[in-house]
Image 1 (cartoon, helix red, strand yellow):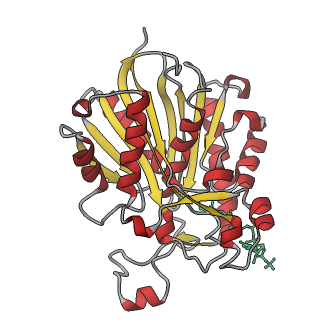
Image 2 (cartoon, rainbow, N blue to C red; image 1 turned 60 degrees about the vertical axis):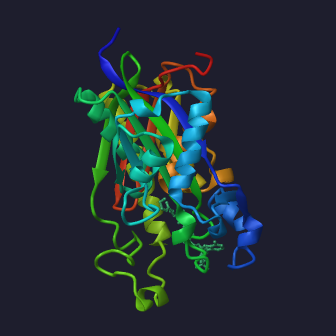
Image 3 (tube, protein in one colour; image 1 turned 30 degrees about the horizontal axis):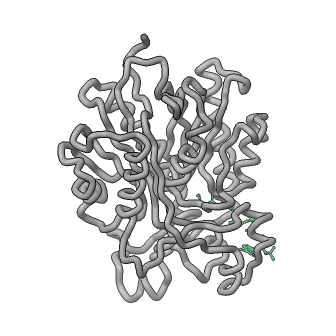
Length: 334
Ligand code: UT7
């Protein structure tokens, strides 16, 4: 028996049904399937159609249902809900409270966490510390976004990249060798120039002018973001390896945020890791911001084994970035 650790004991995911293909995007911006495939690595992405009349909380509910079907849990046993998202249903109330009500997690407190594409690793580290404090034993971490609502369909620098998805992990206190071992997280406030959505907050509240100036969409300087993403994720992974005395051979899986296949390949190159150890599903789901890492874990859940060394790494607006090292907690045939 080990000490008390925060262990992921269940996972679920959900993507909307609508498949937005590169061919369809090519009908409204000057791009092509060939360019997007070669430069970004995405073939299609899932989009929540506006006519469905629902938001990210709906994706979360479906992700929780997916987890319930594989790993039943009592909603009343959940003590805290952390919802990492940049696209909440509303400014208030928070999205965690909507999900708590609809899924029966009525004994929990909950809040939304804003860290853009790094939301999942930030939320996981927050859940870890709730559990290590001894006050909480069961935390629901939800991470997802509906980026389609903040994507400018006239901007070919962003519209082929972004997508909608949500993942959820149940994090529990266990006396265990498995669980979350270490993390390195950063924020530097340096991204406002290169990666932002300037409308809708307290500086530029929504007005005719902010709408006319397309300020309610994400804008990025792709090249600057690309470079910083590669160095930041690779550096934090290296720091995790070093301070936990891990060699690349000790690592079974690296799970990078899915922003661009070339970013992922560059990180693998920097870490001298074969791509077979790197989870990649960007080709079918695109970049759903906080949703990408749990969606990868979901896709690989049946393949991962108890005790596998897994490093999650993310980078996003803020800039926010970092890496979390954990030992996977279960086999699916448990
Ligand atoms: O999740 C965190 C947030 N975002 C990211 O991590 C994204 C990071 N950045 C990227 O993924 C890439 O920088 C992009 C995919 C956004 C752009 O790829 P790039 O290889 O850096 O292209 P570029 O900006 O250097 O542009 C190269 C050329 C330009 O044409 P000219 O000036 O050379 O004639 C662009 O206008 O490619 C053009 N271009 C496109 N062409 C066809 C840019 N976007 C497109 C497009 N289709 N969608």
